[in-house]
Image 1 (cartoon, rainbow, N blue to C red):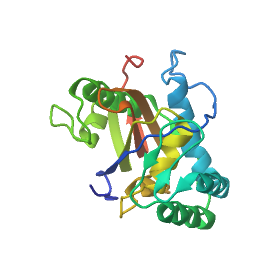
Image 2: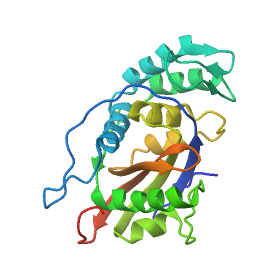
Image 3: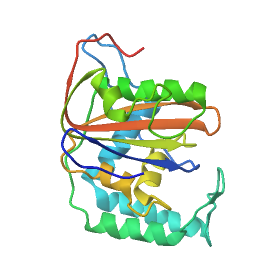
Image 4: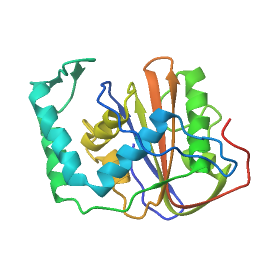
Length: 227
């Protein structure tokens, strides 16, 4: 799976890892009617993406703290599932170097329409048990976004499976173990992105999944609140 940064087109990639790290609680996200459109976990994922973008040096510290829990290519946290990685510390150390040299970027604004598109994919795969970016109806990420608004500039989608903690989701996408292009990381640190949508839910094989959609701009149609 590749990454495309062409205007009005999607770049996307996929991550399948399983581990848990602590959460961070941001402000509540509400729509124009005052209804909350993101769960607590989804808000936390927005916050952790923004923390990484705004303060990559701090995020590098989080990764440095993880190094002590690697034995060979296995990540063994004090609590949670043991992970057998493909690259081990090599990918972690590369991510640390990237973060130490990264320039801080603007935060992303949570967007209801982007989140609705993400939720469509979560709802679909919670039944089908499939993975990847193509829906059961054949829809690609940009087609799901177009159901809810007009995309301007760049857009992208990351998916995490097996994770149920916000920082763990974002860290796994930044490390990008066994993804030579580091495509998930590239999407998180795409300068042009201004808005983000998140939907997390059940997956029949990996138990948890989380879809994160990005856009430079997104003009949302006038729909009701998230279903």
